[in-house]
Image (cartoon, rainbow, N blue to C red; front, side, top):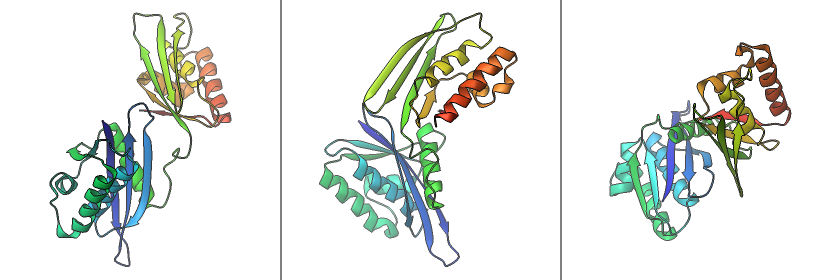
Length: 243
């Protein structure tokens, strides 16, 4: 099953026209999340939201089912039941026609904006409305998962990028001045390619705090190690984002 998380942003302009932005995160099995965004003239926010659904249908694999996640009940009514305001009737028909032509079995369900991919779609839409690209969108990116159990002297780091999957067991030194969770994070960062954006999941709060501000490390050796790792990543154009 393919999933799309969609959102929109809208604002009335001084000349009376409506300017909107749409954003979506498309999840398909075996691939990295795909992020799309765009700007449009729209009569209201609902129209911008429905445009995001249309773009999701266009981006999704043909001939496969697609579940659209949205926090907009009007969009759900339009997509799921073909009902909605008259203002959206033409766009609703366009969404349904596009889905039919591409063989996409479409359904819409509610998702709160607090969900991770919904937050990303929201940021994409806001930036698109403002005429800017979401920072990091043009960078190649990789998903990173850190799995660490307190009782084990090692952590598993898994990285997935387009066309490649890497998994490694990282030994953790209990005598090191650098906390074990930060050791695991530093090992994950070493897997990044120059100019790549790492989307890191399950990094501990301690590891995140120390990466963002190495000076928070209580011991000098840990401070130096973290600061050096950050400097090397920045010099290589590597960005680290915690999810």
